[in-house]
Length: 377
Ligand SMILES: Cc1cc2nc3c(=O)[nH]c(=O)nc-3n(C[C@H](O)[C@H](O)[C@H](O)COP(=O)(O)OP(=O)(O)OC[C@H]3O[C@@H](n4cnc5c(N)ncnc54)[C@H](O)[C@@H]3O)c2cc1C
Image 1 (cartoon, rainbow, N blue to C red):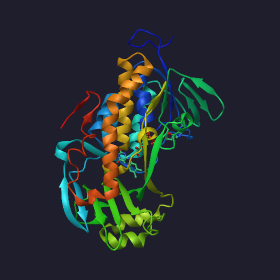
Image 2: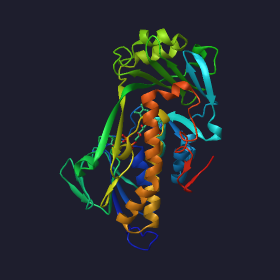
Image 3: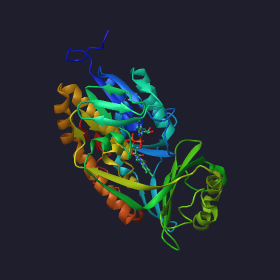
Image 4: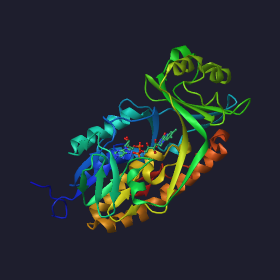
């Protein structure tokens, strides 16, 4: 028998493109509210790209909302301090006035969300690429199959085909700096004396601009973000150019040696997309498809998850899908827009290198609790 939703009518149906953090969250939160949900992932399996990720109270509240928090907290880590160093001297040690935050591997977060999606009854199709969508509620797959739904969610990342096939108006920027993201063993013993459980954001500007964001994910795994301008051929080289990095960060030699062994490392520049609208008819865009942002404030996934979760909440309260989409965007978008703008400024000006930059404005998105629609802390 078809599911019955809280309005007493037959379950509405959603087709979702993309099983990243946004798509998995939207799928789970909708299924938990009585929707029938099919989630399309173009890859052959569900997996996260990248190394580690920071989540703040906004993302953690979403995990709590979908029932994945406990699984994700196990095997992740909150450092005692976010320390910023400039030319190897400490300039600040921040604890964000108590706002919860956590570091984990991307795969760990992805696994936690995928588990809840399956438990909620989401139908997951891998090797299923969405090539086009229509505001009337249709999607077309690469196989040529056309599927109809009451709601289409484009959660297919920064290169979204849902977005581009409909022709949403957008501005796009690419940053001058980029990052090599890798996971290496913690090697605390080999690193020797030091506060190696902290996040340590190390900025050097001379003789070249190189930054290492040292981020412990758990007892065994360390996420290293190696930032260099795209114009620097050695800093942006992959596999990691050991001599270039160890010259400026000699005390990280053991983990840099591990980093240099990784043949699959990738250098990515940050891309920003700003859209004139996030919805059209029965189609909603969430996550990087709607608002890809620079990672300076580490909020792209957090905002993606908040917006996906808030979409399901709005649809639970407002039975008319198109009305719900319009009020969802109006309600939730300003927080993301401000975060995207500040993240862009921070990245362009390399502001985090000054230390003490997690100001109330910079923590605004982090402080949002979408399950109660309040800012805490
Ligand atoms: C260097 C860097 C560091 C970052 N650090 C952080 C951080 O610490 N904290 C944070 O919150 N954010 C961070 N972010 C941002 C974060 O990674 C993204 O905002 C987040 O991954 C977006 O999730 P998403 O689900 O929207 O898109 P994605 O993660 O891109 O997922 C999209 C999914 O859709 C699939 N797909 C794509 N096209 C199709 C299609 N046509 N049909 C079907 N499936 C498709 C893809 O295979 C993928 O599985 C960082 C970003 C960068 C670049």
